[in-house]
Image (tube, rainbow, N blue to C red; front, side, top):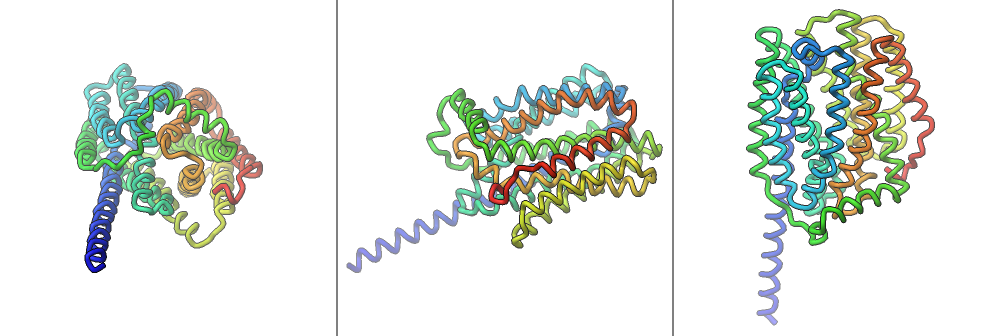
Amino acid sequence: MSMFHKKSSKAKLVMSTMDTIQTSKYKSNIIKLYFFNFFIGFSLISGILIPFYLIYGGFTFFEFMLLQSYYAFIVIIFEIPCGIIADRFSKKFTLMLAGLSYLFVPLAYGIISNKILFLIGETLFAFSNALISGTNEAIVYENLKQAGKESLIMKTVAKNDGMFLLGVIISAPLGSILANLISIRIVVLLMIIPYFISLIITFTIQKISRSDDIKKKSIQILKSGFKELRKNKILKILVFEKITIEIIIVFLVYTYQYYILLEFSIPIFYFGFIDAGLTLSQFTFLNLIPHLTNNSIDKKKLLLINTIIPGIGYILIAIVNFAPAIIFLFLIVIGLGLSRYIIFINGINRQIKENNRTTILSTINVISGILKAILYPLIGILIMFNINFLYLIFGILILFFALKSKIKKEYL
């Protein structure tokens, strides 16, 4: 009897030690992912995006939007295959491939200013982003699940995405300062440094255990992903209401620099600081929302607030003609509008089966990409006629979708 108790205690000690090692491993993976996203976000050109394309690249605004449409289309082509790579083989390998691909982006843009090279750069950038799209969130979720901490998914994803935004906050002003003092070309080439660091980080991420179900054929994974989206009514509602408002807010991200350049002739030197402010606003709301939901605040009401306020903000941007007020409204619209997706994280992940999580998340991004690819050229044309009228329409559309929302409290 005594011998049995000794063996039992030894077995428990071994199990406890293994659990501790596994938990430490998953925490380490998530921390490494935080830093990977920080250096991917350290792009330097985010604060001078419009000058980069219009001044350095020599594009018109319409051509710029056509290029973004091309980028969105290429992401669609890459999205599902990259999701399958992550589900079928290894999410670590997928991140390593993304890090390697990112390294070639600054070279394509920065060697010389050439529109063909810009197309190559957009293609590489689309491939890189498609590789990490869905994979990022899937790694977080699977590590948390192995540690028995799935309830922390919203907070952890917010921190993960927040690290990307922190990279933008720091790099955007630096990029605009260097562009003003030296050149935009040098700023682009300097992006190699943070991208190289992100690649090194991917080598240190440890693989997590996979179920045998993930090893099924790629075509089966693809079919099951589309089938789940098609048949799951709740998932369809969540996806639709997530991406429609998100796309409308993204239009402001692409057009606000053109707007302040056109309407107020603000020097390029300040662009990075404005972009850092916008990103800091998103970062703040992104990390505030999980804390609010943890304090038993109704997610449905919080989502409504995060939708209505950007809608009103868009309308005010269209009718106000005072630079400081406009920039403040940009802070509110982009900060709230681009952080609202975090409210959907729990609901969407609860609706997805384990063995094709990355593929379904990538499929959601494909739907968003299709809409962007179609709408970007149209926006490029409309903005040339009357940008204020366009912002007014955006605001009205957001309010319409908010009032017609079919999301129920239990979905979130």
